[in-house]
Length: 456
Image (tube, rainbow, N blue to C red; front, side):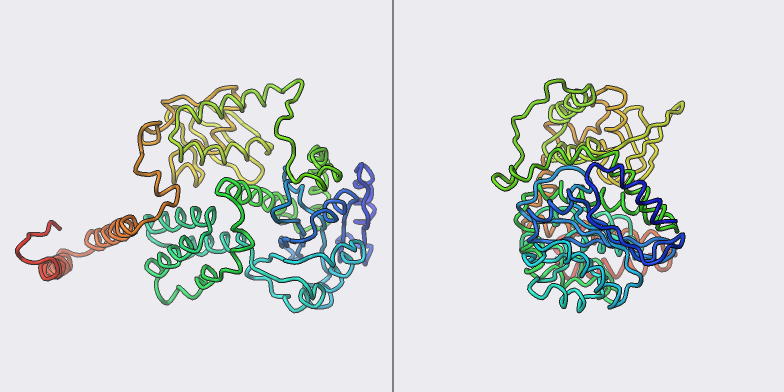
């Protein structure tokens, strides 16, 4: 039975489960709630902000994962911030009220929850408000980012437009100031067809209450935050979201957590009560070879790359340092897998990968860095495109650093319009081309003036 199998797996956990509840004894889990002593102690210390993520499996069953969030939380490691797992019998008022009530029963600190962060598709808001009457329910920055990314891909926009939107979104999420959010809102209004714009809910970008819960993070902290949640949600999807068996999905997830339980050593309840930050001057007595290699890679990134490029790549390296990576070598290519996905890496300089990060920025991604780590190598100058080499690409600093200005806004708008007009002129008949060209000629002459011949 599912309960017997999961209990057998969880008995091996040095931190025993506080609760494990199942309605029926069938092969599937009708309803399930789980919290270990370690998870409970984490929530006791950081109850102010709860982050709720939902993962669906092929049968339509949903796993609710509660994670702690906020400025005081300084936990390293994937799923280290998870404090509760639950599978409701049905995603209705009764089923959800049950899992919330079980959570509250075993966690008296629930009364100190001030904010709950949810995704845009979270429908049971009345149930959540009823069970946590003192908490404010807000959309999470991470879920809004994932929602907009998905919409950009669904709209099948022109590649330059899609790339511009994705880059601007990433930059804005890492520096969610009112000014940057307004810039992104304006960009969406200009680039998305008016009929499709309401589907993106751009008004979320102007709701300052949403972003106050996220804005306290620095750019580097925001980058690490999004990357950590990206890996965490991919882990949940990999183990629970890909199998129709809830029993097998949860067993695989718990098995992964047991193999990566070293993160628990980084959480000292007494220390967290006094100091929210782990000591930074602690040096391992016997550093592993992998740690030395990754340190050398980090040094080579800082030495070879421009500032913005190094910042982006170090974020990718942080994922590698906390991820399991599997490498299968071939004659000219290598298969790199880091928890959530598999991509093709071309090791020959300049190294390339099939992932979006490398295709968009032409920088060493987490997969290329994993390859270097496995080979005990460091980044070489010939593995990096010339425009990212230290001393070059100074004009890109303002873009990647989100240093917006009126001139830059105009430049981006002109670039976008120029590419769009060029695409329209290239893909039309000769007659249509002549008509459009003449119209454009008249507009340019009437706007700028016939006294200055405008190059079209």
